[in-house]
Amino acid sequence: FPEGVDELWFQVIGVITDIDRLKSLYYLFAETLNHLCHIGSAYEDDPKLEL
Image 1 (cartoon, helix red, strand yellow):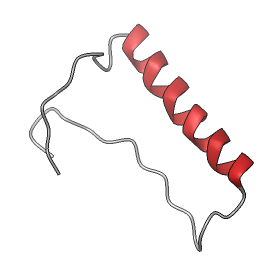
Image 2: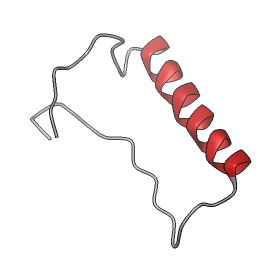
Image 3: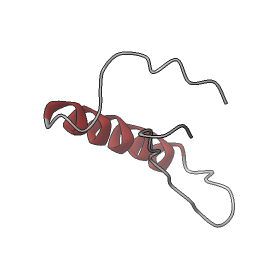
């Protein structure tokens, strides 16, 4: 990632086959990013980053 850009990372061993668990993780990431935006540690606009 470029200077000043961080990433939110989740790692699990194996494959997540439980759809409810996968949805919960998705919402957890969404809430985490939302909170980071509110405290000024992340921005809502697109950083124009391509992987």
